[in-house]
Length: 430
Image (cartoon, rainbow, N blue to C red; front, side):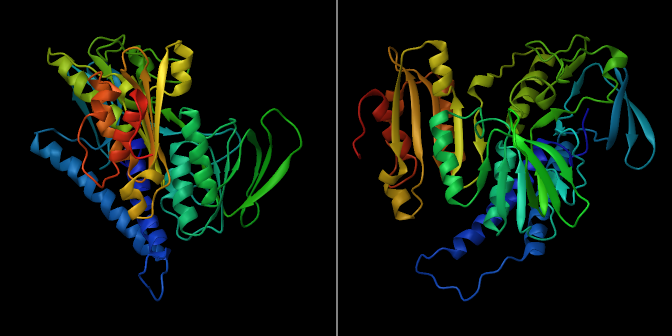
């Protein structure tokens, strides 16, 4: 059961990544590297057109894969009428019934709404609206300091917006390793992003030309008013399970609306499966893809497997932050004796050569066995660098295993090798 590709975390983060790249190119053009440019301006319509083209090509690529693999693509909104039948209101205006011995629910997630705040995608926007603004807002307020909120705030901050992030929790990205998170926040603050942590929004006024937010401390107290041209609501995502007819066929969900499945991705209703954002686990497109592969393997009578503890996560700002495995706080909570190895990109030849050396690699390993427990990277292209660690952690490698692998010089990946050396012994370039 598929939804239109215009909705869901997977396509929204494609929008974000396209704009992040474009805004970073603008930011780089403003930097001084011995190249003189007479004039650098933001052409927002062209930037948005490039973003739309990129996403459209990716979407058509998915449709092409459907066709290549003889998958019938019914475009519309589906809901169950029985455990083996889905009624679809098609985009063309008609309706049809699709039958199947096995049905996989893969409807993804939607923006989590906040009480008293109506998203109009003009002045109060979701990440969808924030990816399609017609002009650069002078002042942008982001409600929520998670992945997408910080990514979108970074986009518009680079293009000239004054960005303020309002977060109810005491920290940004609470799932991130605390040490990395602190460095990450300092980096964003150097980029002029402002943070109001332990703060909740208690009122919204859109009667004027802009937006006025009334905020107060999370624990209650004196209220203040913030003004902005645009407010981005990015306080998380919620499983898209409403109005799918799940109650009609008796599919069980939890209080958060997530569909409950067993280790084979089967719901309590035989023949009905669920994957991705609609089930417990990280709400990430690549996690959903792995779910889908494993689910189909089980349906085909084979073995499928996804370990959510070994799924990487990436924040696509600049620098990026990527991680896999446990944070130091999680390792401590488990009571495991561990070692920590770190290496700053300030000591990495490639990073210094390109004048982009902000960041660090941090590795956590079990003290007795040296088995890698978690890897955290803040750096340019951290989302690419992390995959060596993902492979290592999936095969229960030790930090010494990485340290003894020859890495090309000069490359950013050498920082991972040095951090591994620091974990089991000591680095050689610091």
